[in-house]
Amino acid sequence: MPKTIGGTEFRKMILAGAKVLEINRTKVDSLNVFPVPDGDTGTNMSLTIQSAVKELSMCSSNRLGELCDAVSKGALKGARGNSGVILSQLFRGICAEIKNGDEVTIKMFAKAMENGTKVAYSAVSKPKEGTMLTVARLMSEFARQAAPKYKDFALFLTDVIKKGEEALAQTPELLPVLKKAGVVDSGGMGLLCIYRGFLGSLNGEEVAEEYVAPEAGKSDEDVFGDNSDIINLDLGEIEFAYCTEFFIINLKKSTTLADIDRLKEKLMAIGDSVICIGDLELVKVHVHTNNPGQALSYAVELGELDRVKIENMLEQNRALRAKREAEKKEMGMLAICAGEGIAAIFKDLLVDRVIEGGQTMNPSASDIATAVQKINAEHVFVFPNNKNIILAAEQAKALVTNRTIHVIPTKNVPQGFAAALAFNSEASAEENKTDMIHAIDNVKAGQVTYAVRSTSVNGFNLHEGDIIGLDDKKILAKGTNVDDTLLALVDRLKDGMHEIITLYYGKDVKEEDAEALAARVAEKFPDCDVDYHYGGQPIYYYIVSLE
Image 1: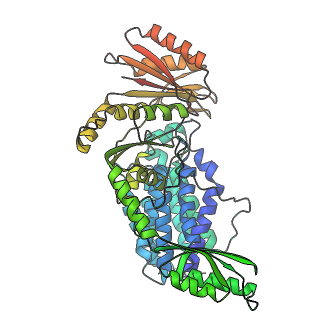
Image 2 (image 1 turned 90 degrees about the vertical axis):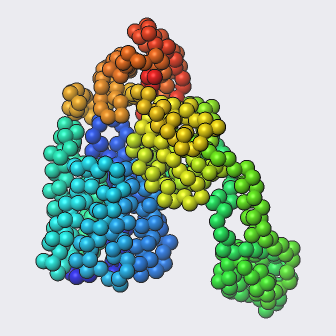
Image 3 (image 1 turned 30 degrees about the vertical axis):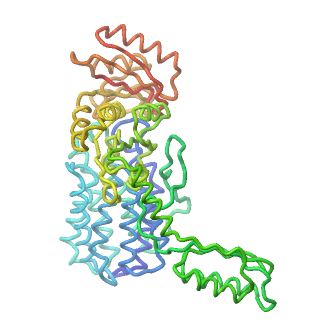
């Protein structure tokens, strides 16, 4: 049994951890506190570690330092939802501790776990006990204290996992909302899945065959269909200056197919974006290189050159940079939401870009950063519109160097609308940020959906299929039909200051039904103006806003 682990073992551990988590992803998702059809902790954590796996697959070296850099970078780029961000920070802290050696001892790994916990806690503004942070902390505390007693890495991890299981079992006692729902913390469960994968890898166990790697999350497609290919969005430094293209014709009689393969290898050594295809009749070549003359010299050994084209990409980049700089504005806005109707409303409110996201489909920090970079503005206000996306939006700041990101902590779509309405192009970025934050404080919002399991929570005895109304914190109403539940929800949310009630109906609601319900709301609350709009959102029959 191993006393230390090196790069090869570390790579296998990450891969196995990702596989065990993916196998158990649905189980982890099902531990969501609220019995609503949007539990996505397992999915977020799985997509986060899969991003780390993707970076690992592109790392040809098995040196521990390079592998650690790949895992840290990949996890950060793929971090989704609060659980994914926390997981990325755990990896970041662990990798920072172990990257400088050739192999990792048990004591070093214990210290790395402790550092991972420290980094993860610091990433959350108000850490809550009873979450995956608690599980990570108790595991790392045990590891640091017990490490000197162990000479076998697998036995050490076995006992670390046992401690984690004890910690997980205690999470309902630390977080009352878990106890009421009758579940343990889903993020803690996901973390233990990863560690079980680590242990299985060290023991040489095969991960279950049914594992299928999930597809990478939808990457940055604009909801409005603007998928134009903007080359070099961040306009950073270009490594290879010259785009070089040509054909080789009238190949020499001595030239062989192996010579064409060797030409490709030579071109790859002096540049990138290499295409070298053809046969002994005609060869097409494309390469980005700093030495186009060398590329032509290699090629002329095989035959004659034809239709040579060399373009200076540095000059093209300078021109594009100048154009974008001339068109750059001071401030822009990015909204995250689900539903084509909701997206269209944001567009009407002059939001520059909308990316798809919400419950069950949290965009990653990398997705948000990429979308921000597509907005040609010095300052970009980001409206997460979901409490589980705010942390990833904050994390995106570390991935963007040429924009200033201001995350407005909108927890729902109506707050996002209010923030967008507060935007004033004549005011400064700081003034806008202050006004937006004040604006979202004046909005109350709720959603109507359905229970996916029977449970008791927030004083309600729920059965699978019950219609429920909730705000961002708890369930406020339940019923057997959507309309009555929404009326009960509004009654709970409304106070004497509210003058406007707006309903946004989802993709499963007919317009005539929304119109009839709006009329009932207006009749019950005659002191308010009532309106309704098509939202098209999944999962939620209605989103309701009170202002």
